[in-house]
Length: 244
Ligand SMILES: [Zn+2]
Ligand SMILES: [Zn+2]
Image (cartoon, rainbow, N blue to C red):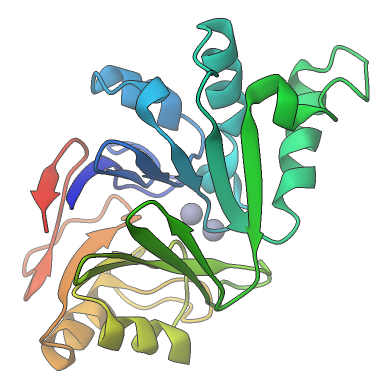
């Protein structure tokens, strides 16, 4: 799998875009404020995205969906279906966002979203799977303050498993993901632990990397802190690409 880092920052980062990454040019994970502009800056074509996967309903992870759909519609790029995989309740949230931002007073303007934009919503229950072509996508319930549901995902292709935490605090299912995955992209909002219910810190991740040696770790959703010793953790920047 080819993984392109679109953004590696937190909402408050002044140096990096909101965390998002693209797998094999067609599966986009998270689409927060500015993600579509960042894709365009990196010369990546939105029309090639066939599947969008959303971790949780915070603005820095899903607020750019109206922009993505509008752009596709205006450029007449809706001939192929876009699958949107997201936690329960997501279809309603996307329609509400569109009505609020582009409804022009018509509260029913986007009720026919499936036909209008050629999209299909797949609202996953925790621990359920969805097969998209050669990929198996599994939703894992994580813990992120009061944001419920919050999912991480395992993406399996051939014998490789890529894990993405979205935003999470320290919870048993995070460790389960570390055991199962070959590669993990992990929320490291803070350098040092501040609140373990909301986010994981870079220093904590360094310790987990020592323990789960069969998994390679990448720190994403990073604040603007400086890392002097990264240990066994990789620190990708926006626009970096890895092959796994
Ligand atoms: Zn969040
Ligand atoms: Zn976030």
